[in-house]
Image (tube, rainbow, N blue to C red):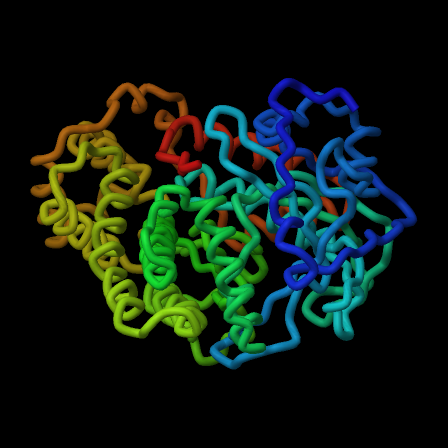
Length: 481
């Protein structure tokens, strides 16, 4: 395979040993056809020069990459699902395929799969993924990336030629195997599994691996008993940042179980997600979330609850008091992260935590005043750059919505802010009357073109428009090693 100089394999997870994962074989598929390849992401890890045939060898047959993992590893973990503990989890239709260093940042990145076949944790599942599920994940990851949310990226989608039966969509339906590029697949549930078996030694090993690999700044923590709390504090900060970014993006994950949260504060595994059509704290993404446990407005609370479950696993190695202190940092970390995320989404230069938090609150009140007639994404589109966009906003299609009392207060606060990099407003994206959105009905329309006519042009055009939006917003992306 023609690898560039950016290809830097570094398969660290397999060094943890057999207590953390099981070697598995990928499924053999009757058909393999490349439907999507994320060439920008591929170039960042030295795989951008692969031909389609070489791409299929790697991401349909999962032939080992040079100097990387010798075989796929199905990772072991448990988790709380809708706050009920489940000890029968683990990678049931995916595995860790390879690990590589990112060009420019040297971050360790995982190539992990979904729909790659059965594993010891498949239970009664077939280990497969619907093509629609892969399409939906590719769209979610692209949109979140554009909106500055720490997220995995959909690296590859291969259609696999099997007819799948699913209870939540018309069947038989088409199949796929997807590969995602993510900072880490070590979940809160990875710790929970070892706590369940009372393996303090394995939790200690895992803490050491996580600190060395993902939080090297904690490596000088002097005493072993302080390392769990130090790690929890760091994970809490990143998780608060992630929750804030979801809220600023108007994103509802849908299934915030502890096995769907990882230790690097990165969003991944998009099933029944939704982007808000308008401001609604009670908006639910998953049809099976009948109680609204994971509704939009409860996401910060849910993240903190999940962090508390992670803290519980660390009590095997640490007294509870420093772990409680670590959890207590969430509130202030989230407040600061949300204020920063909202100011950034509005394209403004920050003024300080208190002022930024007041502006964020005013923005939420204003969006709420707009009700169901003011869509979430157009609000940020109209007011990007603050006062520099006021004339554009007040001449646009939503001008009448911006005359209410909450908007008067919001606009008054905006006048105190300078635009950040105002040259971004000259991008053609902001000359259009409407922004790029990703609402449910559009996703269904994109899928219908594929399902009914095998027409991938609308899907590809949508990804191109999302990429244009990403370049126009030019929001902050995580660069931590």
